[in-house]
Image (cartoon, rainbow, N blue to C red; front, side, top):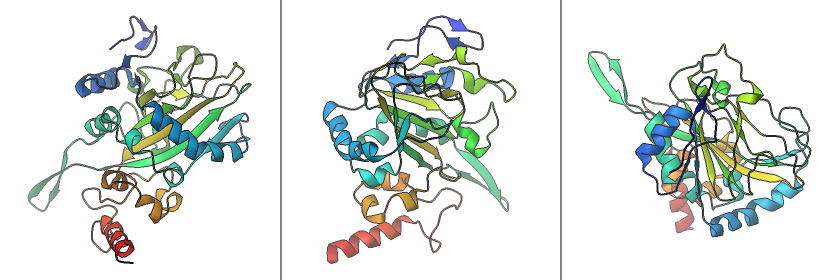
Length: 297
């Protein structure tokens, strides 16, 4: 593991984001995320997985126009509905340091009273938003923002989102590597982010940046002569509305191509104490019936 030394005002490291190997101890990664709000996992996926993701998703990216607005980027291409476009995201979304950290940080036990019974429960988590983001030369900096602001979260407070940016190509300070303000998830809502507080994400293709929803971040300025491409997946608490409507984005036949853990993450699950049911049952029964019908047909 390598880390930052020294701190800027507000607790931000001055020498770069902390890096860990893919076999790092989960407790250590959770500790870094709790402290800094962000961590880079080197070699998060292997070359084969990266190449197959490019095979599946690259054509859609090439076919998309630039976003065309100031926030999403007039020199930036974005493709969503990723779980409908490829069947190869399982090793990404279920990586032990990503999914493990998300579960450890967000799935905190809680309780409620039902009559005189004190009932313990744990919320589920779900895939919220997915995008392939390609920043082209000449694209300026994206405004620094917090992704959990979508749910009007107040800060500081419990984490409701853990997000991943997989480097599909190399990320550098020059080509628009994601800008991050470490420690900013500890700030209150009256403190505005400043560009000079943000650090660029620098990592080779196949590595990943994990960050918490309360961390200020944004796409960087691409002053290089080639695009930089990242694949992002957000995991949110199961009792919040998904940023991307996965039930419309991913047809059921595409959902069935993934293992149960990913299917449930896509939303075919019930969050305690009773959110997301179908006919008073776990919605996963719909997939079981669809799968049985496919096999019998």
